[in-house]
Amino acid sequence: MKDEVIVSINCLVYNHEKYLRQCLDGLLAQKTNFKYEILIHDDASTDSSPDIIREYEQKYPEIIKPIYQTENQYSKGVKIDQTFLYPKIKGKYVAICEGDDFWCDEYKLQKQVDIMEKNPDCHLCLHKVQAVKEDGTPLDRYYPDFAIEEGMKDEFEFMQYVFYGYSFQTTSYFRRIEDYREFLNSPPEFFKVSDVGDEPALLYFGTKGKTYYINEVMSCYRLNSVGSWSVKQKNNPELQKRHIQKMKEMYLLFDEYSNYKYTDQINEKLSVFDLSMILLSTNSLLKKITFFFKKSNIDSYKDLTGRAKIKLLLSLYLPFLLKIYSKIRSSK
Image (cartoon, rainbow, N blue to C red):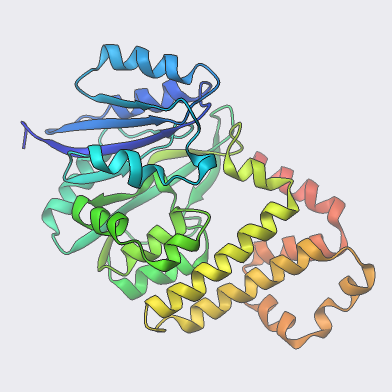
């Protein structure tokens, strides 16, 4: 095991100069009894990210394996993982860390490899992730934000966590190369229609078999990083509507893919999406007043979490307070 690359880390970078050193330092700090490689894809960054990558490449030529683009590939609709990273992977396992996030446990890779080696029927390994502010200050917010007992989860149990919401953050994803290869070579239709990769990936790998969850914080997710997808969406209702529609299409196709065994849970998700679409489309006071007169809206409302109910009510009736509520949540 010492002479071969066991883990390949996929690191996507675009204008991450403010955060990139912290990301790369966390990857390079890993203490393992095996070799690993860091495949960095810079998507034609316009800041100093390429220079930072070259600096690290010179220091760690056996570990850092960069790919530099002269034209932005994401804007062209190119699948970065499938087109550029997958063909270069040497590892038995694949991990992820985007350039604005970072790992905070130097034994993260070793722990995940040990679990996968001991459990050949395990197709996915995840762990707890902590959110940090844009400047790196830790927040009292975690993914998942509810208690899950550490250990192996069968498909049905794990899928309930996925349906709950954004439970698992991508910096924790750890997969076998054969599963990853199958996923990229023959992607399911529900993955193709999605405008994001994390949630459909969880749906796919979660239905492959067992998943192991480590209840330890081993990486950090940076909120509101400059240029991030979430920030672009935040103040753009049209982008949000498009995303909701894509998610609805994705879940309907997944329902078919999974032979309709999760139809009840998927219908609940669709109800939440419908409510979200109403919120984004409702400016009329009359519509807001009559919102709960529809039984379907009432039923969907009952399925929401307490936090989601608060946000819904504030969005409908006191939008100015929603901004205050959101600021309070993000500052905690």
